[in-house]
Image (tube, each protein chain N blue to C red):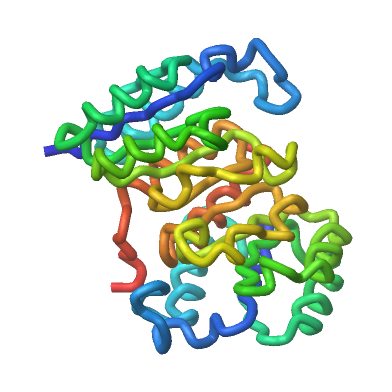
Length: 147
Length: 150
């Protein structure tokens, strides 16, 4: 059977992980997260492809192409989560299961971060567990249709 | 010594598998607890289970978790959205707490989009059916551990 393949997208400023606001986002780079995801993917017998974009349009392009190659999506949309209806529409259009991820607990932060406009078109949301949020999301996706 | 985690179910979760199975699935609370216990066994942690429909009882139980358990996995049901008393109890207990929901609360009625307990929890997991609890347990016991970053 073909291995399931998941697309992992990180949005604006996540390329700066480990270099800014480490009290909120922790140490360690996005590259470290991607390495961790690859290791976990092997254990779960799935494949992951990790991408980062600062531009909203680039994320939308990537999402539009996703159904041809992927079985599910993990997205940390960064600040776009709170206002990008274009992203919401793009996720909805993929018809793929999508898991929304946050590194920090957004509900413990500024009020404008308490709303995610993409959450309603995602299967579920995982936030607050540091970089481990991504790993939990991968487990969630791999388990969909299972237990 | 093995970590001890309290798994707490709020109001109406004792009706799982019996009501609104379209939203919450066909598993009963006992089935879900058995799955959590099995996962806890694999992870080498001890779990205890508590369910109550009463807000005051939940507040008392959470208070008693202080200094006694290493973590709380909490599905507060509808209290999530308005019980400031529960929020205060979590704060006061000073036990790392993970908020879990079976359904994706953001897909549902607007009054369910706000969690008053989220700001005092480590994090939130919702939308994955009963598997939300399994993910929550894993999140709790591996808290602040990023072994793959080492």
